Structures are given as structure tokens and as C-alpha cells.
Length: 164
Image (tube, rainbow, N blue to C red; front, side, top):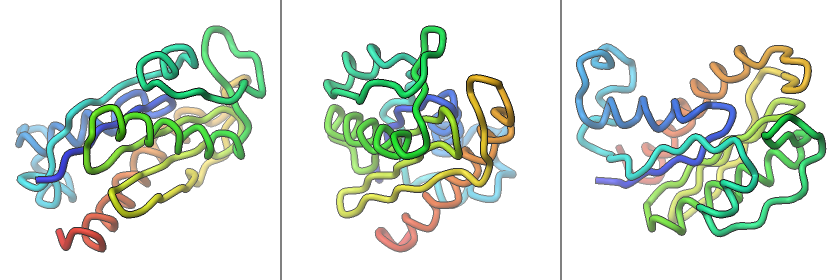
């Protein structure tokens, strides 16, 4: 079985949560189209919601760039830096827990950044939805799209790299 850990910001730990529920066979996810892919093939070591820069740096032992925008107590980057930060978060959680797959997500202004880091490859991508954390424009839609797109991409990766 493959081990997975997530360090999530704009997806609020929901990717790790749904993966865990499918891996463990919870009744409320048995009708999910990817249930048979994840159940019996993965386990989730950690699913972390990490909106603060200081928390990410402290727990994952990484250094993040200075945020592009001031935003309450959280971090807010432009899309280019979101992609960099998502990679750093995925790498940090993967290294910290020595898991097979690390997933990092973060989104400020733009389409956000998502990284799935396997033992062999780095997959960096954005959502399909432009959002603005500061004005709250499309942030719910971006979150939903980010969760769905990450699960879609993870299924492709498990098939391509692990023949699952």
C-alpha cells in the first residue's frame, strides 16, 4: 500500500480527509467514482490544514517566500509563488513523514498551486478557477475545483506510476 500525506491550505484538509475515508472504507464515500482506486491501495499518514506561514515552516522544517500580499493572519501569494509554495509544502510533508506521495495546496490571487510529489516525479498544476483570497472572489468554487482536480490527477498518477 502507498502512503500519502497532505499539507493543505485552500483545500482545508479536505483532500486528505476524503482520501482517508475512501482508504478506510467509510460508508459515506462508497459511491465516490474513485472509491475502488483508493480503497485497499493507499493509506493516509496525515492530512494537515495549514493556513499560516509560520505553522508550515515550523512543522515541515521549510522556509517559504515572503507572501506577496498581507492577509489577516494567513499567507497570500500570487499564482507563480503559489506553485512554488505548493511544491515546498508537498516536499516538506513527504520528507517529514517519509511517505510515498506528498500533496501540497495553496491559493492566494490566481488559480492557486497544487503539487503532487511522488518518489519519482513532481506534478505541479493549478485549478481551473481564478480566485482572489483578498476580495473572496470565487474562493469556494476554486476550492471545490482544486479538490476535484487533485483527486483526478492522483488517479492518473497512481495508474501511470504504480499500475493501480
